[in-house]
Length: 216
Image 1 (cartoon, one colour):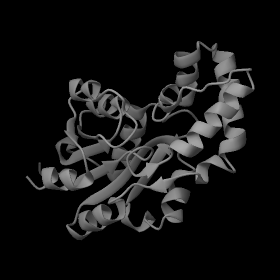
Image 2 (cartoon, rainbow, N blue to C red):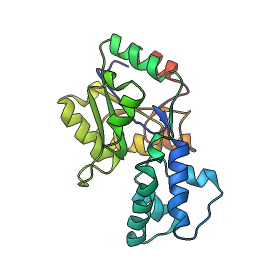
Image 3 (spheres, rainbow, N blue to C red):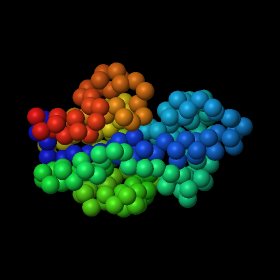
Image 4 (cartoon, rainbow, N blue to C red):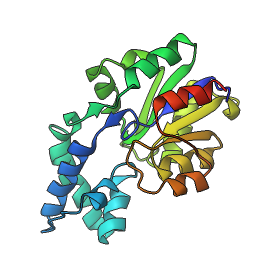
């Protein structure tokens, strides 16, 4: 699979952010009197936009969903953002890709202001040419919109040169929508890998497998 530009999702792909996101979702839900003990349900918040997730998982109105997002941010912006860790093999993989001449970027549904801070915190910001996320003006909110923004910043003219590595169906569907390939990894937060396959993603269990696939 010969590619020149490798894009990574952030939550569930580069970083295990389950602790911080879970605590912040529960914090927001508690503001509405909801005590959620089912971690599988909480994990479904990791990846897609929060506004959509509160409506999908709890039937919130648009007004309450925005309130819930604001409550989530109360805790996340100062505390939750740092409650995460790199997945195994991430730094080694980024170093190898860089040494082999790949152009590397981040395309995350996380608010863009946090993405470079986290990359710098873990000492891996040096590997990325573009670090993109959801924008506060709403112009890049969906995964497809984030990807289009990142592709524009890379100056991509041939989408066949690009692949997204992600861990959820939202990554695979976003990649499909913008016309790029997707590699799905199984160690992240997706609970239904068939949904990724149906969206056209090639599935790998580890980043070592990803590297081998890229070199085919």
